[in-house]
Image (cartoon, rainbow, N blue to C red; front, side, top):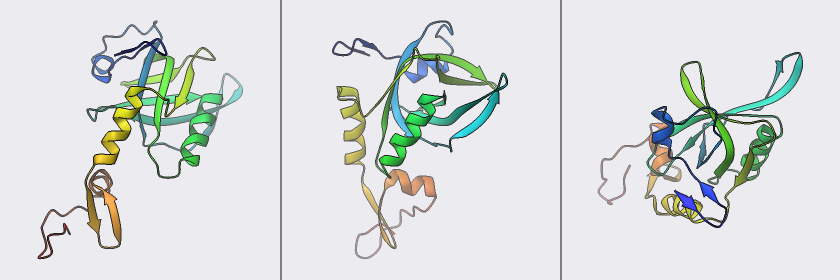
Length: 166
């Protein structure tokens, strides 16, 4: 995908997962933030550094592991916390592809990388439209998205007499 307004050259997750990308070339990726872990302080080469791990999910549901360091880790934690439970779309620019514990992973490249949250580009709109049109299901107490229901393993697709999914 290319977006002329930001001069993006987005690499799709399938290409990354197939190991096609050169680990020496910085790339751009976009996805919905998922599985955000807590910010950690770890010792690296005798210095304390902030680190956070999470996944990005593309429009096809593919996930890619991510690990951000330093100010990038702090930034994603702050933005996701500020969003509450709302969807956060993250554009990572000039990031590197690597392998950690036999898993392909995206990581920032020192201060060369850039991070944007819900950037005003058409790719973000595609993610947000997908979230808005997801059907709702009823879970005894309230409405939740189908995606939440599946992840919580609380979905039962048996119609009731009122036609509501229970």
